[in-house]
Amino acid sequence: MLINTLKRAATEAGLLMKAGINSEFKVHNKEGINNLVTEVDHASEKLIMSIIRESFPDHFILSEEVGEIVMDSEYKWIIDPIDGTVNFANGIPICCVSIGVEYRGSMLLGSIYNPFIDEFYFAEKGKGSTLNDKTIRVSNKSEVIKSCLVTGFPYTYLDEPNGPLEVFGRLIRKGIPVRRLGSAAMDLAWVAAGRFDGFYEHKLNAWDSAAGFLLVEEAGGRVTDFKGDYYSPYQPHIVASNSLIHDELLTWVNGTNE
Image 1 (cartoon, rainbow, N blue to C red):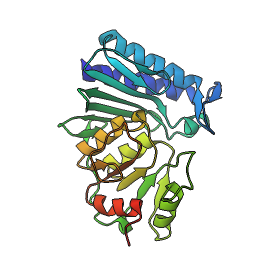
Image 2 (spheres, helix red, strand yellow):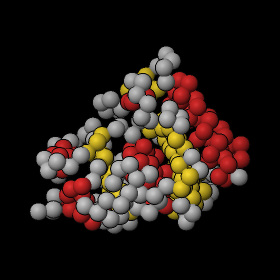
Image 3 (cartoon, one colour):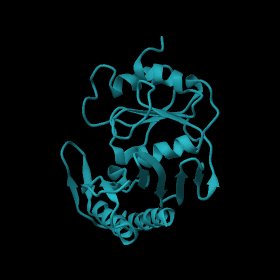
């Protein structure tokens, strides 16, 4: 029932997104510049939560817009009703629904759904990752210089020492392709699918990465913080890769590659 509920919630919320992307909707700015939320974000979140509550009314929920709904439960649902809201608000179909399920502090299930390209990603701890029910694996590139990477930029502290712009410049000046798509969940899904060889970002929230990092790990990749330590979605830094380039990518991110 847990898996069915997860898949149903992601699918129905995704279809709601697809129907709403070219409609008229209100857009509001949260704290900070271009930190957007739309009516569709709220509608997607409400739909997801209602589906979860039908079967699991006592489960803990952490969602981007409503925050924490604390319950005395070993299960926690971590929800991003639309990851890539700026893209969505501008009609750019690089956005998705991202839902992770944590059990006793460890990620158990993850699902990412982009309805615009009809890609449904799913992972279960210890059982691999799939795209539209077909098993996916990370890429086999073994050098950063030959890799295709992806990142995201926060809207704050861009110019801090070894911040996002400095790391980005370090890579692109060596001719390494680095993309910025505007959806961390999609970035992680595409690392899991072998389209990108690595992903790094300086500042994410749990709902951005909870489902995606499990997808990468279950597809044979590696996910850590910037120190190379165990990754927790409750801290901001992330490096995800096909595992083969991981240690080298960490040196590029930390500025110790030379």
